[in-house]
Length: 139
Image (cartoon, rainbow, N blue to C red; front, side, top):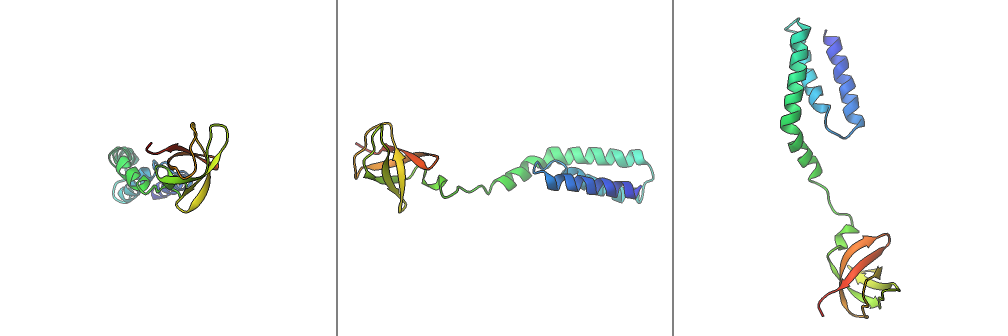
């Protein structure tokens, strides 16, 4: 019976490695417990019951905590970091023509819904393709 549990553990581990859903890892753990149990208890029904119940309990009680730890480290990319920052217009922006804005030492092609003259301070609202959407800050 231990070979059956070892096969199940290997298949579930492969399934977990090929996906990122964090669902079969709990059954890998419960499969290990069932494998250990198979050395002491001959009843397959008891081993299967422990496997299923422990897997479900682990899934329900710990999945959200583990996912929050794994997903907690999402950092903004270099592009996302400029959203919300301010920059200065170095080439006027009109509703029909793009201009240029300097943000964090880099020059970006910028567009806006309103006219913004040179040397105006602007806030970066979004990145759309290779251009940034801006709005005038202050007056």
